[in-house]
Image (tube, rainbow, N blue to C red; front, side, top):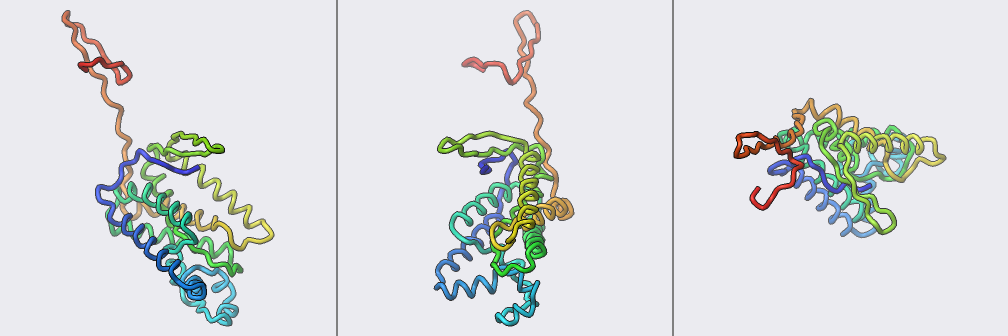
Length: 257
């Protein structure tokens, strides 16, 4: 299921959301322009390699610093391909702009970065022996989903579910979408931990950690819950005899109103 639209109002000027999208795009364009050898060095320096912290001796043998914690944050600005980047940036725009609109710019930036950091810690703790570099903004974006669920529980999210070549489009309340999404991450995360090999693949525990951080931090950093607007009031019609008639929003209108 791909989120396509939301009824939650976005920020009037989502400068932080746009800035984060541009920063992610710039890092990706820099990364793909590197030679294969330079790109490998870039990945092992700035992406998150859990074994660097889980096995410090191995890290030192490979020339990596187990006391360098920047990759917990820098990996959230890196992506593994065009589709990875495009899907994450679309989701960042769709849910980041509404959340930013309920916060001030600097607290929103701190919120995003903290969610990414907690997501990285979640992946690290669940995969301490993995030597596969983990990268992507999905932990931070999961935090946006958690914040969105808390600020906009009554908003609607329109989803696209492709069935063969026919797109099935439907809308659900935000709390249903985010709840189902989080339950799927927990199920997949537990399944990955029980698998024979937990290295590589999707960083489910980054999603889980980021989402929980978003739920916990959005209000603490000044996020203001959005009130779902009330339905439009019913209008009144006064007949020539003085009888008042109610006309609800469902009534059919003629050419003159």
